Length: 220
Figure: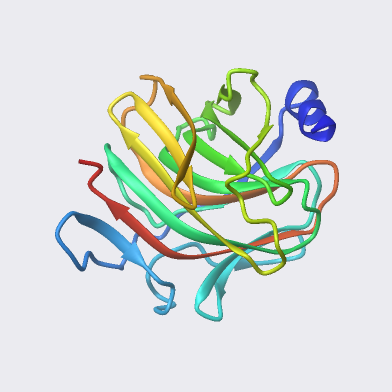
């Protein structure tokens, strides 16, 4: 907990973003706006592998790895949406468990190169935080303490999967982990944009997080 608090309050994380190539995955049921199980390597997500980071398809899942400390890396399919429920399964792969990873909605990259989005984070040591980044300025909106707080909803066993579901509906936002709502907030600053997957490091690099079974639904 102390490490989370120190990083959140003392420094703004270094942000590394990738540009989506336009999603190719298609809906398969009523109410489904987008879905991807990463079996199609051309479904539109970012592909990059380097010494600093990796965002790439990996054996039927999607991998985000971050080599450096204090960095967030995200990937997007290239959508433009307003209200939605974004679901994804997630796995810890390697590196420090004092990390952050999760989901994005209403992402926009501005003409000056800055980024805005709502984020829904959990960590591999059992914490969560929700909030927003507006032109690269980050604010935690839930929990009300303004820092990562523990949740028992996360499964912390090795190789355990965690089902994440972020709802972005009007000015109401929430995160459910394994079917349990862990946090929510209200905000009206960002109106629409892309979805995304994200992973980041604090004082130690080398984190690897896997995602699968991404589904975007109508939140109604």
